[in-house]
Amino acid sequence: MTTTRHYLLSLLLVLLHNTCLVAQTAKPNIIFILADDLAQADLGCYGNPYNETPNLDKLAKSGIKFTQSYAACPVCSPSRAAIMTGKYPARLKLTNFLVGERTDSLSPVLPAQWKKYLSSSEVTLAERLKPLGYQTGFVGKWHLGGGDTLAPWGQGFDYSRMIGKNGLDYYNYSLYEDSYTKVFEDRGTTYLTDKLSDYALDFIKSANTRQPFFLYLCYSAPHVFLVPRGDKVSKYLRKYTKFDGKYNPYYAAMIESMDEGVGRLVKLLEEKGLMGNTLIVFTSDNGGVGIPELGPIPTTAGNLCKWKGFTYEGGIRVPTIISHQGVIAPDQICDRYFTNTDYTPTLLEMLGQKQEVMLDAKSFYPLLKNPQANFERGPIFWHYPHFSNQLSRPSGAIREGDWKLTKSYETNEIALFNLREDESETNDLSKTNTSKAQQMHQKLTDWLKNVDANMPIVK
Image (cartoon, rainbow, N blue to C red; front, side):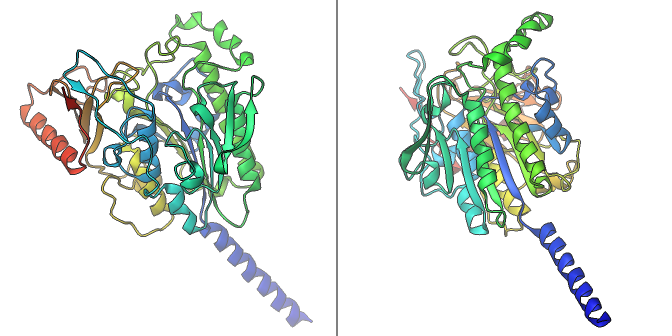
């Protein structure tokens, strides 16, 4: 009897040990949250004293806040394509938002031609994760093309709740699943941001607990129109004058609703005991809108130059928070730079996958283990050969190390900045450091040729 007990006890210990090993080595869940037109300066954890973002601030405290993370394009569709594929928009030929078409009769150029969809032949992040056993869910704004082969359900997502009309109306919208089956329609009662959070929670609740999940949650907030929930505006109006009218109370209320959604997600993960096995990424598709587009000015880029649509820092530098409880050390700040093509190789390396050669991306996984690691990203590039709704004009840019060069595609004028000394891009050094300017310009020129970039058309 004693021998039997010893045997059973030993067996139990082995089983417990193996269970712990499985728990420790299981593939983590991945939640990737994308805001729309959110400036880095819009969050409390990045220094905003007006907007209230307690849940995102707490998330930043639990992991790493990146101060020099970039979107691959200053407007939305190309940036989203870069996240999904790990490729530069210029290589994909998807360089403008899908319905963007502006010209200037006084300009010497016409905008470049571009694809108005993400080709189904491209391999998305969801399609890379599914063979690894991931359940894949998409909720929110897709903005990468329509039709069954181009919508989320044709691009690797098992579960889809896609906004129609790209979420420009927060109280008049429809949501769709496979084959454009309408699953929800609102005509003035349910706030869109809240509904997207509801569906994100539903996906997590319904996920098979024996498989990891990948949730790609794309809020349409705080993109214009500026339509907040009415019950959230009054407190921002009350403190509006304390800040000399510098901030927009309606925009702030929209951000708060998104922040609440993030808080609800984290709470559910905690209740289900999943925080220790879930990586959370929060970022934005591009910089904030700094002009009165479709209403009053939503925001500013703080001390950064310009805003959405521009290849200056205010248009391309975005907030990024990455948290993984028990894996990523808390309360870290990282000033190394990377761009959003880099998420694909980073996540694959985290999952122990053999690294393929990716021409436009580099894994920054070492920074998740040590934010101060000696990580050399190398040059990153931007190509925006269009006229934007935000008054920007066709341009390109390159950053390498502390140096950044911008180029006008209309005049061929270049400007050179040292971002370590001049984050606001106010001091053009191209005339005083001609060798560095020439070197950077040549690299940009070579890259444009290498990716076969579609250029503006000379009239």
